[in-house]
Amino acid sequence: MCKIRKFITLEFISIKPDLKPKNLLIFTVLAVVGFIIAGPPGMLMGIFPIATNIVSSSFSAGTDGLDALYGTLAITRKTVVRGRYLFAFIIAAIFSIFYFMIVALGSMLLQNSISTQGLLLVTLVFFIFQSIMSIVDLPILFKIGFKRARLFVGMFPLFVLLMFMLISRAYGTSYESPDVFEIADDAGAMFFNVAFLRENIFSLTLAVISWLSLASVSFVLSLNFYTKRDF
Image (cartoon, rainbow, N blue to C red; front, top):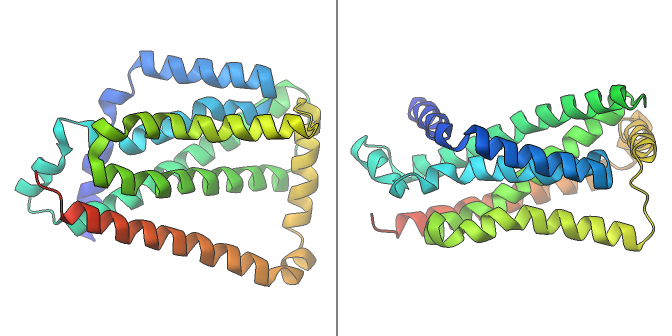
């Protein structure tokens, strides 16, 4: 566990070059444009890509990332894989909290009240979606490395969000901010209702098991790919 903590610390150090003002400005512009086009959900156009970029940044450091360095520090490949999955989930949690604050601030600026339950549900959905992005991306990064995977890693979250927006518009879903907050309030009140949780305990348990199973399969694939790579 101590080695994993040290590894995650090194991962956070490795992301500093990617947090340049220019990069942050690009993602901020994407978030603002998304907000103008689609309201609060559109802000994910900037937040998802930067979170994904941070998760993959250590893969891009140097010729083979930081992997050669980790080898000299006697950090096993299994520790590297475990550490990168934990790092990805920590990043997802950090940006979920960030999105929570942004939506709360947006509701105040737009003078649209949103309940704590609504905010919590939006944050939970963000975390799940961001974690799934990482679960999908990591085996690819471990298999072929950042150089060959960077286009997919960079464009995948934008593609998913674009498809979501297009499908929603095709079915006549409104993206006006008041509707978004109202939907979040209604869904949050329903989801965090004790009766709802009791009635849907099987479905919720199945959803958790599915997420854990997907993460486990992703981890096994990543470990298998990574142990076979040469540095």
